[in-house]
Each structure stands twice: as structure tokens, then as C-alpha cells.
Length: 106
Image (cartoon, rainbow, N blue to C red; front, side):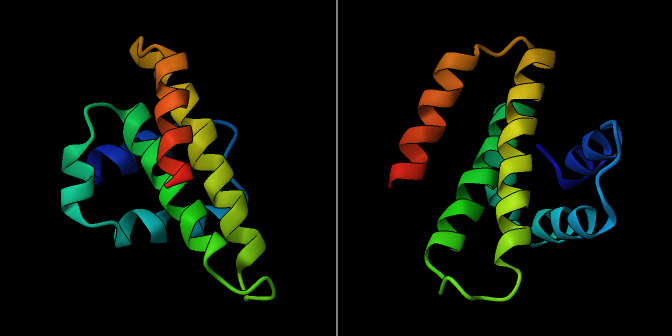
């Protein structure tokens, strides 16, 4: 998966995201190492990975950290997009969700 693939796919989502959430999602995609993106076999998997990585980051921060709520919303959006992408790509949702839960538990 390339960053361009991600950006193109995200741009096609409807309804559009609120501006602050959209900016945060694009910042997360821009800051994700190329190797993480290249490992993903599908859009569903990369979206899920972005969501679980962000959730782990949020969990490691102080509860009063600035931007915490926006990052939680972004993590939720990525996981929601993972399920949406799975439906579009014909990826089985149950194994995807099981893998994401296992990833999040680490």
C-alpha cells in the first residue's frame, strides 16, 4: 500500500470528515513510516493498523494530554474505515477484527 493509495481512498469517503479530524487523519498518514504502509496486504488492514497504532499511542499518554479526544476520534475513524474497506475489498471482517483486537491487546 502506498501513501498515495491511502490519500486517494480517504479523499473518496463520504460524508466528508470535519476539518479538524480530516487534518489529524492526514497528519497521521503523513507520519506513518513507509514500511508500515508497504506491509499491509489491503486497505482494510492498513486502516486497521493505523487505528490500533494510534489507540496504543493514546493509551500511553496522560489523560489530560492535548489532542487526546481528537486522536481517539481518529483511531475510531481508522477502525471504522477498516471495516468499510473490508466490505469494498471482499476481505472477511471477522478475521480482520480478530487480528486488530490481538494487535490492540499488545
